Image 1 (cartoon, rainbow, N blue to C red):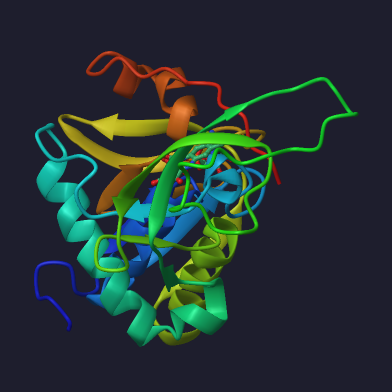
Image 2 (spheres, helix red, strand yellow):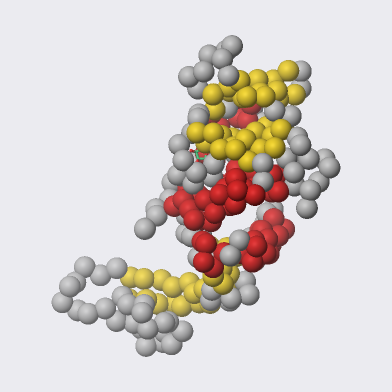
Length: 227
Ligand SMILES: Cc1cc2nc3c(=O)[nH]c(=O)nc-3n(C[C@H](O)[C@H](O)[C@H](O)COP(=O)(O)OP(=O)(O)OC[C@H]3O[C@@H](n4cnc5c(N)ncnc54)[C@H](O)[C@@H]3O)c2cc1C
């Protein structure tokens, strides 16, 4: 539904990960005129490599509990709106936590512990301590790159959203107001993109902007991704 506070406002969103793309999608859907700036390609970083797990209650008791719960339910309605199961593999899941013991011996075939009646047949190796951690009501999964790219395509096709491939260099501020962004390689006097509002969603690169690092401490966290 269009919203008078954002309608026809020019918004620049910097960073084409899931956070930037979702922000751009919902602003454009509410009637804003959005430009998304991404230095490489949409979902090229963590947002294209994640496990894609969505959980209703795994953040309960922490500061983002309400956000996680709202987000889980929003995923359910987005999947209906954007044909999630077909477009980006949205699927509610039963979720199990297990421990695996690595073995270097190739002579002994992998076995499951006899106590593991919870384990599906396709789990091999020395799996133990299976513990349900979610049901189809509380856990789901998406293909993260397809999810992010489905959202941007939908916004570009249906709403006023433009994608610019370019690297944000800095944000120009006048008084207390962010006025425009300058892309790398473009000297002053050349194209600066002006906006009424600017959203910075650069993932771990956010800390490179003094505008952000003066306010928050942001750092990257390395994680493995088996694809
Ligand atoms: C292996 C792995 C598994 C994960 N599994 C899960 C999971 O199962 N469930 C879950 O909820 N989360 C998971 N996460 C976490 C999740 O992927 C991240 O929290 C999320 O993708 C962060 O999104 P983002 O948009 O903030 O950042 P990013 O995806 O890092 O996007 C930032 C974007 O900004 C762009 N950018 C940077 N600098 C500039 C610049 N100067 N100008 C223009 N663009 C710029 C980058 O190119 C990038 O595309 C996982 C993460 C990893 C690494």
